[in-house]
Image 1 (cartoon, protein in one colour):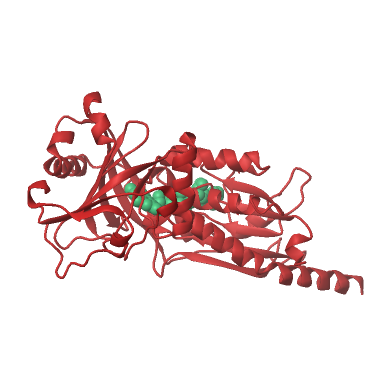
Image 2 (cartoon, rainbow, N blue to C red; image 1 turned 120 degrees about the horizontal axis):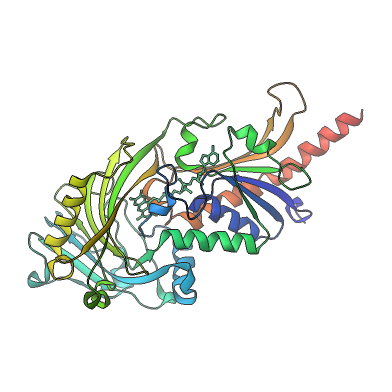
Amino acid sequence: MSPSHKRTYKVNILGAGVSGLSTALALLEKKNYSVKIYATHLPSDLSIDYTSPWYVRIIELDTATFNRLAHLADTDPNAGVMYLTGHDFWDVKPKNFEDPWFKRLVKNYRHLKQEELPPGVEFGITYTTGTVNTLHVSGNGYFTYVIIYLSVHAPKYLKYLQEQILARGGTIDRATIPSLKALARAPHSTDGSKADIIINCSGLGSRNLPGVHDHQMFPTRGQIVIVKVPDSLWPKAKQFTMERYAEGSAMGTGTITYVIPRDNGEIVLGGTMEHWNYQEAASEETTKAIVKRVVATKPDLFSNATILRSCVGLRPNRRGGVRISAAVEQLDWNEGWGDSKVVVVAHNYGHAGFGYQASVGCAAKVVEQVEGCLNELDLVRASSRSMAKL
Ligand SMILES: Cc1cc2nc3c(=O)[nH]c(=O)nc-3n(C[C@H](O)[C@H](O)[C@H](O)COP(=O)(O)OP(=O)(O)OC[C@H]3O[C@@H](n4cnc5c(N)ncnc54)[C@H](O)[C@@H]3O)c2cc1C
């Protein structure tokens, strides 16, 4: 039996965004972990420093996440996940366009006829999904091809994760943690006992967090607009999602026009991708431009839409991609005054514009890496205890 099965390990997690919550849930589902989350922002909060509530949709690269969310869409209306039918439009048909690999898997995949294309669009595809059991999704980075669109109402999904964590005995405290070491020093339980494992899921916070100071991290601002359509149009609008690429635009740069209905009657219109822009206030000009592009693409649904609000979020981007790691480390509690402690230090952050679609897969990966450190943790701790007795 591996040491990981012998006892319960105490884990302190920093961050209650989709990364921290998914990591907590992945640990709690394994049963031999006790989990405490510390975070400045919790589900239900809205802040420019908390990216997860702004999330719009899953475009899945990660089958593990997708399968979990698809299952929730089928079984739990409280999770805020639902199915949609996808349309991808290109203002200019990509040179040497090849049908995406998933063509053979989906139902009703076809190229749109000329008369079905919105004005100014040269080329488009559409497809519908099969049942949950047949779903597979992938993408190729730039133009992400999607078998099925799953819309996640982010605030609702975060609350759902929070409830799952609490129901499994996890705890969540609102607190701002000043450094990575402070996360290890923070009490794990009410008896004051400390964590064996700390996991940093602080998103963009990792840029300035002492002990991490990851200067590969940078913000990619996204502005979106939330609208409602007249009630008579909602039955049609809730089935419709699209993504429209202007010539030369692609994920990661400039603008991308998209429409994503949520399960609560709101519709998200997007959007922007602005690297290094921290501006919190929504720009009225950008809002108008987003709405104009969407109305031009789908006037029958959106000409009479009512704007409810505009929102801004910062994608926690990272040069070099997401950081998922775990290692056994010796931390000095008191800044070098002895009383050091050996813990597993793990990270799961830097998910840019795919934090949701990767959340279950990344949580599983970081947990796997943590588990790979447990033998070493136990050995190092046992040997320090024997040394202490000498
Ligand atoms: C407009 C927009 C559209 C997007 N669209 C998509 C999409 O289509 N698909 C997709 O998958 N993703 C999308 N994303 C990206 C997705 O929202 C993020 O990748 C994801 O939310 C990041 O989650 P996180 O948990 O890593 O970070 P966050 O949600 O930012 O959470 C960080 C947590 O750490 C806490 N924290 C940080 N520092 C400290 C500290 N020192 N002490 C205590 N707590 C701290 C915060 O309070 C918070 O709880 C989009 C983002 C935006 C803005």
